[in-house]
Picture 1 (cartoon, rainbow, N blue to C red):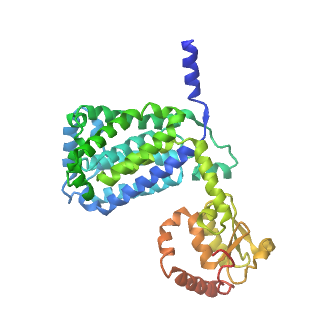
Picture 2: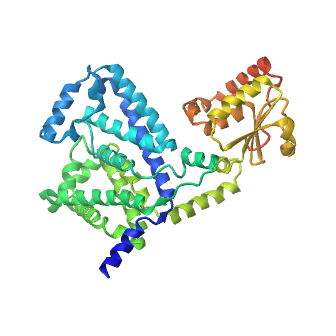
Picture 3: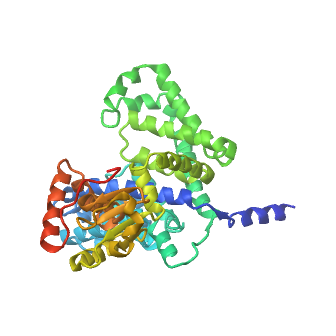
Length: 438
């Protein structure tokens, strides 16, 4: 009987699972990595060059001391290959590109490896600066090497569809791996707190709230209220002890996840913990039931369908391959531009010569002799610059231009540039305002 139960349990690890939680977690985790990367770039010179307060040899000596000389894990770093600033800049450039590719789900296996190696290397290069959130990111970056996070909401998934290949199956163990890591974090922090008498006697949070470096300004006065400090301290212990086991029962899961979200938002509001709270919130996503996620997305989709023209609706139409660009196939400049745009855009966008297919959208009265058009779901027609600006959302390589394209006055400048280019290189005349929904 025991052998049968064990066999059933092992077999259940390889049952198919909905990949949606993995895809959402990859996106949230990628956003965290990107935010952390940008913050490090702002302090690049003092942190990662020999001109800073912690040169490479000092960082290696610190790692040697922490590891006791026996744990090479605390010492290895690609930064050790060279002390030059050029080498550090190259590593950062590769790291930034890898993070964006990981976020978009492009070559996810390879980019996961690059992200992990460079995340660890950066932490080893400046080992004194990192807080708990950085350790969480480093740990989950390791597990992302093993889970198939690029099978949904990813460019890899689009590539499978474009090539006519069946999308690989995600197994339950991939989600269980991330879930187990999260449960172990809560259990480990609970056991560590038990070794500190201040957590047992209920005064630990009071000490944290009184530290100017860690506490928010508004929370310091509350540290003088013993009953509040004691309640918060013991509630923290109770939550961390009560999360790791009950969360595996479906009936308790959503309640515990909601409580965990409130718990970490409370930490963020009271203490300066860097990226810790946001990292922990992102790492709760693998616990979310896929059925609930699809239900919530379906509700959003219903609301989007009722409000054509809104951004949520536009993105949904892109996902359903209902973005179609109509251009002048007899214009050599238009053909060259479209060739480059097709290379940069996701395969979800369609491209059609209006001279052959213009009748399809005649009900929108597009002025094809004046501009190229982006037609969304045969409902909204965007001409000229407005079409180009919307297409930026479907061109990941050009996403850095999005903030510029939406600056105040950008439409006026953009339409002037489009008109100038059209007159000089193409046979089209200046575009008119959008027909609807613009």
